[in-house]
Figure 1 (tube, rainbow over the protein chains, first blue to last red):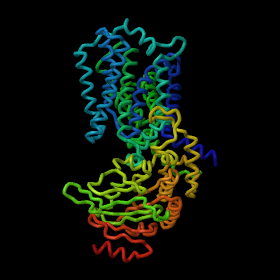
Figure 2: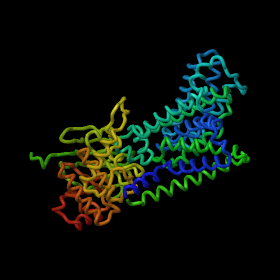
Figure 3: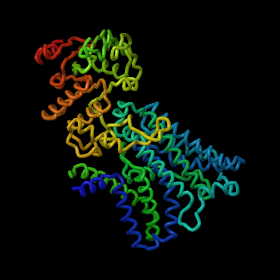
Figure 4: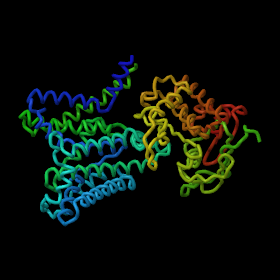
Length: 326
Length: 249
């Protein structure tokens, strides 16, 4: 009786399907090419995965509260570009980072105002700002690629991006873990998290209980933009290059990661851990196809298949779980 | 004045206009503590407008509102909640994808480590108190961690009532409390409402179908075209007489 209850609680967890697929895929790729799980390859995986996972965590928290953000890829590009340009102009690198993050907060706020004040779907509002912010990222560099200020960025790189000697991790991974813990507390343990879930699941019910649902959404829009910008900064510090064209398509990857990780498009369902599993899964898949010496052009095909399979699994496991009686 | 005739909600000549439409015309109502009152009327009769004023969604254009004997101005939904008025609409009572415990405490979570309005939920307290609350309404549920979407319509009403009991809600306003419920479940809801009344909670039900609230109300107030056209105790009337009143108008 009790084991059935445990089974039920496991399979109805929104991230269960993604985690299962993740483990299967890791094993399959390992069997195809045992270097998939080699130290060198894991180092690559743990470098690129957290960057998309940061974005996906913001996206999933926003989705839990019932809204979308398609502008994250553009915000991702803008923050890195702004940081580099300001630093090149002689601004202290830490101040540059702070300013570009404040700009990201502001973009998140603008997204929320457009969506809530004018009562339009966030899908459309952020599709609009996706184009606008991308354009800004290109305009501010005047279509030239800014030189990366290597010397000025020595400390930020050391604290945020460089590999940690003797491990397979970079500094960004440590930050990712810290942020993951904070966000997990925010969404799953705090009252703000409970308000996010109830706002997304049934906005009228949350409002009837005195939850200010607008504030909940505004907060999560801002958080989502901030995390996308932060991810952009990690990426630029790591690659030592700021291109205004980076992150095109990241919004869809982040949403795909969130949905694979168990988020519902209708709000009220999803976990921070699920977003991470989804993001790591996407990057493992990408990398695994390369390691398996398959044509990389199949990546999008694989992502699409994965998305559909994961959502079908999620939906049916949930249905099965709710019908299970212990 | 004995405790039985203590006024919980008293309105004097409430008027409300929506543009050129006179939605509420000189409505005066006096609802006593612990009463259960059915507000009946067709769509557009004024009952929803009246409820929206009580719950702070709209403000009356004229007339006074007394809560618990005191002249009160409700500015917004939060004010109304703070007074102890809880308004539950049929489709807006609970968040289906959340657990019973989380639903019970939405907006009023017990928290630790507070910074402003932010705090970490005391989840063990939420779990034990939620379980205790649903036991009080004799809901046969194994745990307060079950998702609301797995509950039947009657069980969901039980959770709503458990929440009102837990937070000692003074006035519970419910939209169609027994709609879509089986006869057996309706009987259960009836029992719960008796329990609420015995704890001193005033219950107000709104409906367009008299049959839905007749069994649970002590008193029925009929609205038509923005006016109160009848206000009778169940013991002094019959369902036939009331039906005639509503349809004749």
